[in-house]
Image (tube, rainbow, N blue to C red; front, side, top):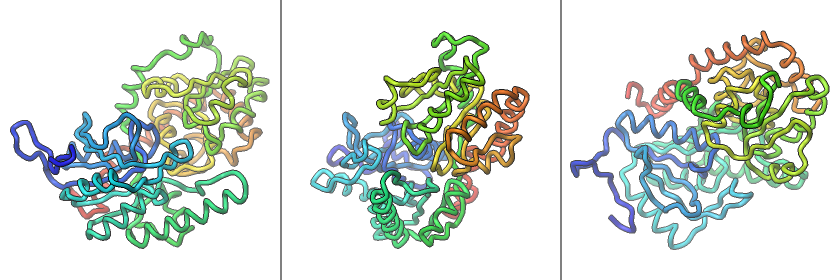
Length: 402
């Protein structure tokens, strides 16, 4: 052991516990930060460990967490010093003595395969260059389907320029790119990158339903009548998720359904903006424990996510798992999960009028809601489980049958 980081794991008998291969995942953000990429990394890591492999996750440092640890699932985590730009959404590596020490420990491990989640973080570029330097089998998985930056034109242009440069640097060192959905694959053509295939985002349907059963009864907690329609939003409270549009749609929805409530679970900059000035019928729940988020989806009449950009939204998969009918935009993998309107509604855009019209139509048709929720649940079970994603990952590394 050096600097508090062992070079190998030990089992209870004192021998090495390394079975199969060692997979190294790079994810600029990781648990306990809750997001789609973070959960994607964690779930694939847990299943690889279940199959007898060793998994290391390299990520960005978080306050009060150690630079290295093995978590309860057996995942080894290296947290590199970083500057938490954009409220922590865009960590930038902080080079220095602590960074170099941790890097030496990481690269002293016997690594077989390297997975880089997303192409645009500085950590991703670093990972691609280092893996190439060591001739490691490596691939990049894209989780997006639109430009990162929104806002003023100069900001958007600067963001697009940076993103093009990041994609070029990553592709130069790591030619094998994949996407979590067909939309993610298609988006890579923006950078003249031809992806090799899909390693889908996924979910464990049974585990999701069990967790939803353990969550709170939201109608009871908020004293909502059993007959009151409930629309759920789950996600980061950021402009890209369509929060402004959904809130602006609520007055029209309440005209048609005066007792309708919109329950919004998630934290972010827009939470603080709207916390003291919410429209009638809107309840901002802030960040919530995972089982309570899932129970919200199970108890809601609709899940609405008028998002601008997704690779394949975890919340859409979670809503499908618990049978909650879905309204979302044609971003990421949603059109694959919801191939026609009998499975769910794909919004033509994210304007308040479009959102309001779709919500009113769905709330007016309980038969459609029941059928759509069940059809999406069955399609999820067939196509978007972690068994499917893991088989795709093995195939990408030429490890079919592992």
